[in-house]
Image (cartoon, rainbow over all chains, first blue to last red; front, side, top):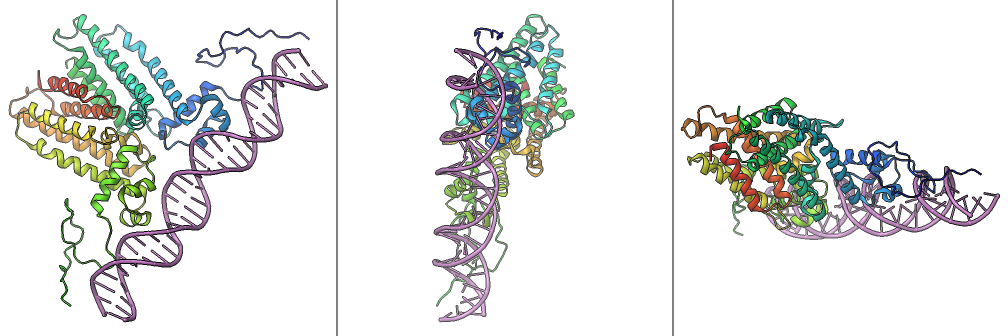
Amino acid sequence: MVQKKGKPAASAKSVLTTSEAAEPKRRGRPRAYQPEIALGKALDLFRRDGFAATSLDDLSAATGMNRPSLYGAFGDKRELYIKSYQRYRADARAAMIDIFRDELPIRKRLERIFAVALDIYLSGDAGPRGCFTVMTAASEAVADPEIRAMVLEGFSELDKAFAACFSMAREKGELPPAADPVVLAQLASSIIHTIAIRARARMPRKQLEAIVKGAIDVMVGA
Amino acid sequence: MVQKKGKPAASAKSVLTTSEAAEPKRRGRPRAYQPEIALGKALDLFRRDGFAATSLDDLSAATGMNRPSLYGAFGDKRELYIKSYQRYRADARAAMIDIFRDELPIRKRLERIFAVALDIYLSGDAGPRGCFTVMTAASEAVADPEIRAMVLEGFSELDKAFAACFSMAREKGELPPAADPVVLAQLASSIIHTIAIRARARMPRKQLEAIVKGAIDVMVGA
DNA sequence: TGATTTTTATACTGTTCCGCATAATATAAA
DNA sequence: TTTATATTATGCGGAACAGTATAAAAATCA
């Protein structure tokens, strides 16, 4: 019979945001799930309830995958948590990176960054989801070195991104020469952390925006 | 026989820091535990592992109380968590209140406040314990209205204490008249939150102190 | 068609979990 | 002493838990 000649190899591990990509013909029974979508569901659950309070039954129900499939695709619960966290970081980075790099005035840029952060932290059907890095720092990071390293790297990435922002602003004369980009960056990160935490306690967006506005005034001048 | 005449009544509920107080003679079998000490042990566990990852067996072992005694003394796990949290708040308040009210120059006062905060967040045998308010905000506060209310009240208490600090400093001429005590207080709280979170991820004290120093410089002038 | 491969579906194992029922124990009061 | 009261000690019960073993199903390959 005429056979379709599946593409030779070329690594099936391509990272795809959409699931439209034509995978090379796989051998056995086809998967009933889409890994990226399932991982997103797992992330939703972990963000809502945290690691310990999320059971594999919950994850199985949310992803539509039965337990053995979960293990086959992502490993055990901890590995799934780690992959969920990496997915969160990738998503957050994608949502932020353009604004960080933008050539807008510093004040406008900060406003947009914090607005996107609030969108991320306040979204969620069953209550505001907060920042997964902060939640993970508060819980799993103490006892698990590998998770801790990822969290610290997350803090560092944010600090550096803000510092680059403030450096550029100072070069363009938007900030006084004496302004210290690293200190300002740590301040900006602390605002990110406080609104993430407070959002999680359901503080209304208006109040969080007031905190952001006051902080921006202090950082770049009223 | 000669009997000791226990003091009549006078409310057994007196809040005592030491356990030396002579309780009025109680009727049945005497307790084998000291409630305040047991509650402290429970708090230690909850701070280390969080609500979901702390089992009643763990609590029973740490307090030396068997399960029924735990229930009798503190109610179920959630009630014990709430009482532990209230205890944490009382302890933290006791450690801070004098410094907040002190008449020291604002810079010195802030330095002391943050130093005590770091002491609290970095203590712990099995890793830094962080801020229990922040941890609770990140986990239980979303779904539990009663716990959430306590957490929000905790944020508010800290904001107000800082605001009072900055108000007094402005009145004394330590800050420019245009300085906004509420905005500065939210900044100071955000520093508290960021060092609590970062401590939990085992960021070294030196780095946390650098964050504090930079923030103080921005808040009250370098 | 039949063999091979990969995934799904079901169900099991042994553990841990929370809350409570029951009985033993230690004190004060009568 | 006896009675009442308050706590401790033991352990049960049923549910939930994480992980896996086994078999059925659905595809490709020969």
